[in-house]
Amino acid sequence: MIDGFLQTTLLFGLVFTILVYWFFHWLSNRLNMPLLSPMLCSIAVIIALLKIFNVSYETYNASAHILDYLVGPATVAMAIPLYRKISYLKGNALAILVGVFAGLLSTMAVVTLLAVIMKLDYSVFNGILTKSVTTAVAREITAELGGNVPLTVICVCITGNVGAAVAKYLPKWFGIKDEISMGVAVGTSSHAMGTSGLMEHTQLGGAISSLSLVIAAIMMVILGPIVSGLFW
Image (cartoon, rainbow, N blue to C red; front, side, top):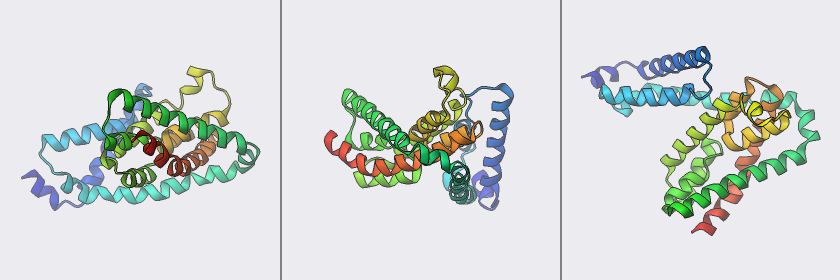
């Protein structure tokens, strides 16, 4: 009954998603808890409520998919601080490239090691391998490698949200004071979601992170098939 009613309510998914996300964003700031990620909590609560009220994903997504169109403009907007800090990028180009390569390689090495130890299926391994690059690129690479694409989306989402949640606190925990180092670390490991979290605290770090996530995506296109082939 509820599912049928909501099919005629075109803005249900959109309004519902915004309200749930706004609530957890407010709660996270109020409690000052970095791991209380608004996006992760929103996803969990939305899934639970849809299940409880027996609302199909198709009904929910009929209006919620409008939010998908905002991903492009939001990603492009990250180029603004990148442009403003272009002088820093030029002066540290080699360090950024080496840092991104090292970070991406270490991430893939850990995933491969865990896959071998846990004897993961080939499709599962490829689904996890691309977890640290932005969703659009990760999905395409996983599909080309014959991996589990839905698993990739979940892993990318979790990785990004964890990165966004702890981006503010990592420098304190590890004694990192250099914004460029922080930007490379976040952009390489937690793509656009982590970058958005870092950008709330440092413009330079956010700019470096924006560039790093692009470089990491390009490198993954090259390194992903190589590592996948070696594993198989």
